[in-house]
Length: 387
Image (cartoon, rainbow, N blue to C red):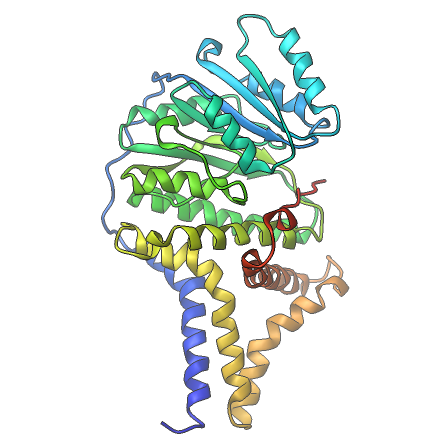
């Protein structure tokens, strides 16, 4: 093989991989009518007992609204218990929960407070899982309000014995920034892909603020786990159950402050690297959805490496007109992303610079997320600041 041809082959490999991850898999997911699992036998009259498990650290400014939301769920209170684990909170979180314990009457759901030393979310969830008594565990976070019918819809799916875990849909409240609009576009694709995968058979992970699973399938997770919403549902998946998506179960989230999306994506993707390293069965024939996993979930982490192959191969190619044209085309999105903060929102150019910035931020987050193998989880985990 000619030495001058090798860089172009490397570049072509990176380009092919990037195009497949960005456009090829979504197109195949849309067009292919492959094997579909039977429709979930959802039954809204099915009412199993449910334990809500919620870890909180210094959530005094949010806990009242969340407890009111949980109390307002359209679900029989006698079938419901709520466990709040305070993760070494130094504010009034625990005091507020105790106020609610004293105020709630017999017809309200049973409210349990566990005050734990600071140990992180995973350690707190372990305490909640161990304390839970009911058939279904419903995991949620303090920040996101829930639709009153959310739990009713989640629980109804467990009437189907093939369902081991179910997640709802997170709606992002409208934001003013282009950053938020671009993330909305990405999130709409994720929701659509989840729906298709759920119809095919199963998801691999859930949305951390709104998912439920059978208590019999849950158990302790490593205390440094960053993504409980992946590691716990995967236990159901590899036990032969389905992890499904129900868009009728809704939670709401607020826009992240401008400039904070990188840390949010970094934390999430670091957690995925962590899970994939700890669950190697995802890459084997034991994963009955392996093609979807490699193309979608793992593809998200592989994409920046495909881009590096593309850029590196072109940079190493012999100088010439074609190389100049290729480099210009390949690095144009990077330039657009770099000048985004200089482009006024009213200009049409913003429609190119803003998505380019989001694309670059997400891939930088995916690339740097490998730091999870070198940094302790406590350094990576930071709460998301919202407007």
